[in-house]
Image 1 (cartoon, rainbow, N blue to C red):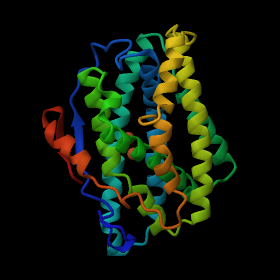
Image 2 (cartoon, protein in one colour; image 1 turned 180 degrees about the horizontal axis):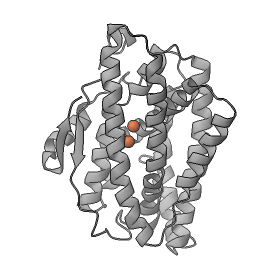
Image 3 (cartoon, rainbow, N blue to C red; image 1 turned 45 degrees about the vertical axis):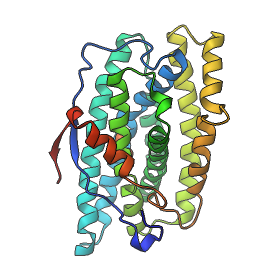
Length: 287
Ligand SMILES: [Fe+2]
Ligand SMILES: [Fe+2]
């Protein structure tokens, strides 16, 4: 991928895909191989229906602010496809989360997100700042996707279906990583607001990921097992493959004034996975 913003291929064509998976028969309680990693990923899944709806709403609310100029037509098309991709993610994770409910877990994240959004809306926060928050979370999901592709061993103990589900979602997060950023930039979004929203987003993401994971482990009756804590420590802080270290540098890159989601990044790992697992999805449109 090119490294100057002017020549970056901002939005690859975004295919809308139907992901093929049978979730109705459920999946193992510790599908990721151990309690900690399973309940961490489950917690993330619980955030998606409400979180990705917020991403969709923020893009939808800001799209009418784009000038009618034809030079924005490609961005408008990509925005529609971004919305369609996120809508398919929401639907799959709703089905995933229904299995978690049957396993006895309680999704608190689905209440936290709408309550916080309602508070910010009541305070009159501008739609561009909701979009800046989406830009922030889209960077987090893109970094998670990059880590998943560069360190496949992190999810290799998971069941084949669940590996495919997370890699399909990661592929599309990688593909559409710059849509919210490009829209924010086209609308004149300011650097300072992008950074303030990022810091707030990272704060809530850290607090709520930790709280929902702990709650899942509590319902799983594994919260106080030493093996759970050991797994958590290794997963986050292993010297060579700890998530804290793997995510740290790309997360800090967001603070650069000339940051762009595609700088030094490539859509190739995502495309390679999608091409190698074409039996897992059906294209349903390129709007
Ligand atoms: Fe998504
Ligand atoms: Fe996304």
